[in-house]
Length: 220
Image 1 (cartoon, helix red, strand yellow):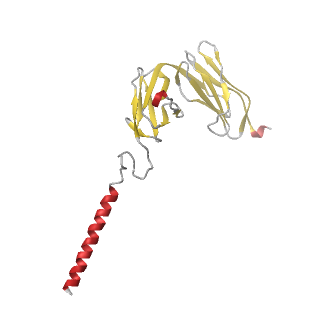
Image 2: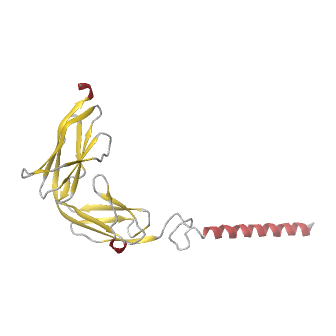
Image 3: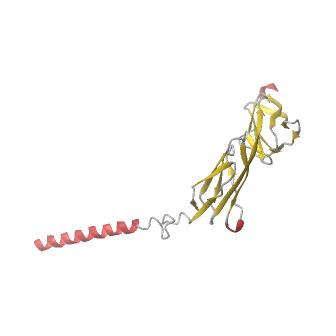
């Protein structure tokens, strides 16, 4: 009987040792064979992000130093007072251009990390004021920035409020010296019933105003 109990104890001890070894062995794969992935093939390799310094403001990447290919990188834009972003480029391997997407007010941009190191470069220039006159009943007009460098594209959104629709619509952009600036209506929309216009910022302040009639649906 003693010999039987002794054999059972030895067998149980062997099972416990085997289970602990299996657990620690499985955990060692969590970092992936090259230390860059999760071990399940769900992530790619990590590549370096280099942000060149700029005069007139700062550009900060998040993540700051490197990112896994396929992940999203955010670039935060912080101009000095009176300055505005003039250009922004992200360059990958062999000088290839990486597409960036701005947020609604152009204070940050995002891009998808390619399978290569990238270099981020930007320039800042004097900013000119954009004043939006939001005074047409049944509409709400906004611009994607309040300060812009000459030569940059400004986007203006005109929201037609619920229960209204626009007639004889047009967007007037006028420089501070009285010169009219051409605004182009685009097919893009960021909400239902929005009108979207773009114009190129001149080297002076501008005033933006939507001209048109926003009639109520019950007026017919």
